[in-house]
Image (tube, rainbow, N blue to C red):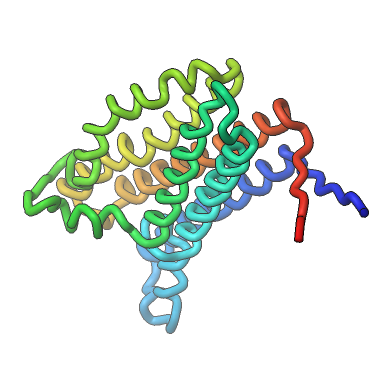
Length: 239
């Protein structure tokens, strides 16, 4: 029987993901210059290409990348769940909940599930119109879940080593800060001066940058956690 090792270099993975995120953001911001300062509609197919790289659009290349890194985080969480399965004081159910949570976020990124589930469209949620900072009305039910999430994950966080705990908190702050905090500012801008301006383009770029940075940092924290606690992981294949 032969043993083959797959060596994972954490720094190389994080550098690659970060580089892709930065390049996508730069290309996306460049598309706004094309939209604002050129008659791009005269070039066949250019409008489609612009939308394929704009981080403020849906179902395009930046969306696919965001969904991909969320899936990677979900897979790493599932691996940790398997390693801790039914071991005492291992919080394996919390790891599993996190894995499913990130899988849902990936599906939501790819298919905009929150708008379908909540019936949100243009500031309307469950039949009621919201505006200003609550224009993206899905934020409202999320705010009500925050106390529950704090209670659910508090003991789990306190059980982690200091480095992992701090990385988890920082990555969550980046992701939630972008997805909720900065997006609420985007809702206000959309309501007051619209979306065809540099204030809105900048808000979208910052929001998506925070979200991508939060997930990439979380991936780093999970890989580092596996490195420190397990070093090598084997997957036996049986008949």
